[in-house]
Image (cartoon, rainbow, N blue to C red; front, side, top):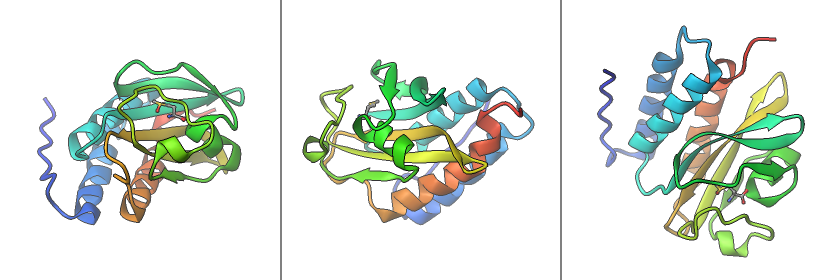
Amino acid sequence: MYDFTPDTTAPKAELYRELVIAAQALTAGESDGVANMANVAALIWQYLPDLNWAGFYRNVGGELVLGPFIGKPACIRIASGQGVCGAALASGNLQLVADVHAFPGHIACDAASRSELVVPVLRDGQVIAVIDLDSPHPARFDAADAEGITALAAIISLAIAPVI
Ligand code: SME
C-alpha cells in the first residue's frame, strides 16, 4: 500500500515539492511507462484539489493518443495543433488557459471543464507526452501550477517512455 497523505491546503509550492518527491519515489526502479503514468495521474489527482480530469496524452507518431488518466472518458486521438493539448505538442510550450471557452479550437471532453493546464513532457528536446489538467473552476491554474507541473514533467520524463 502506498500511503501519501497530502495537506491539500498547504501553499502550492510546498504541495508541488511533495508531489514531485512522491512521483520520483513511486516511479523509481519501475521501467513500465504505462504503470508509471497511471500512478503519476493518481498522485496528481490526490495532491491537487479542484480537478475534473488529470492525465497523459502520448506523442505517437506526431499525434497525441490518450494515456492513463483520472476523469471522464476522453477523446482518444488529438492531432498536432488541435485544441489545447495539440497546441502544446505543436509549440513545445505549456498552455495555461484560464477560460477554455475563449480558447479557439478547445476540445471539450467534459462539459464541466472551465480552465486547463497542459505541460509538455520533454525527452532529448522532443515532446514525448503532455500532462493535461482540467478544472471545473475558471482560472484554477496559475504560474505556480505551471512551474510545479513543469518540475513534475521533468522528473518523470525518463520513467514514462521506454529507453530506446
Ligand atoms: N481539452 C483538451 C482535450 C483533452 S480533454 O480535456 C481530457 C484540448 O482541448 O486539447
